[in-house]
Every structure is written in structure tokens, then in C-alpha cells.
Length: 161
Image 1 (tube, rainbow, N blue to C red):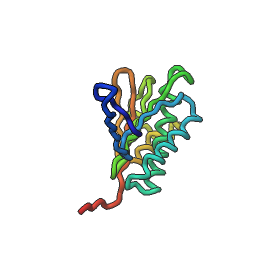
Image 2: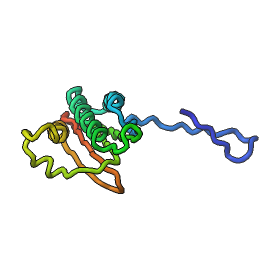
Image 3: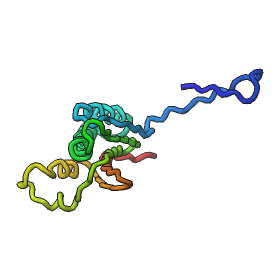
């Protein structure tokens, strides 16, 4: 993408500034609070993860974990239903990808969910699935916004000379 910028007078030649392409630039989107939009998030994670060192299996694990986080945000973190939105931020890097899912729901106690036995219904299974698929999960509450931060690291050897 080219941007033209005039220095001061129309008689001067415009200076052209070329913005450098960065495949590791974070991307942020907001989706309506509907389960049919989760597929868009999966496609975004796939496209953004390709230039990284993550393998196809690691990308698939991250997509599954992000799907669970998005579905939890849609089902439990959208008090106004379809009129709410869920924010997604994907931060690629050479050896890892971070996905952050944000909602404005009532929140939950992650410790209680992790301590509860699986036999007590389906509630909490998504959290355990997410825990098993990514390298690190952070749950945060800030200014009436809840976020889940998923970190997936590549297992490839990055011995750069």
C-alpha cells in the first residue's frame, strides 16, 4: 500500500512512503455473538499462523482451543444475546501465536471449574479441553471485560545461526 504525502506546497514533488509488509502484525476483529461466526475466527487463525513455525497439528490445536473459547464467550459471555460482540485478537510471531478472546459477560471462577469433577455435567469441559491444547491460558477481568489469552508455542527447533 502506498501513501502519498505532500510536504508543503503543491509545486513540490510528493514524497512516497512505502509501508513495510509485516506478516507478524497483530490482527483484531469483532464478531457478532452467534455461533455461525466462529468459522471466520478459525479461518483467520489458519491464515495468520501460516508464516509462523507452527506445524499443521499445532495450528489445528490452536484453532480448536480458540473455537472453545469463542463458543464460551458467545454462550456465557454475551448477556445481550445476538446484539453483543466478541472481540478476537490474533498475535503471530515466528515461534508462537497468541489468541485473545474478549467478552462482556458476568465472568466465572476458573478455580472452581477446574476443581469440579467432569461427571457433573458438561459445564467446564471446554476449559479443560483448552488447557490441554495450548501451552498457556490466562483468564483476566478488567473494566467489565473478560478475556481468555491462549498461547501456542511451536515445538520446532529454532536454532538460528
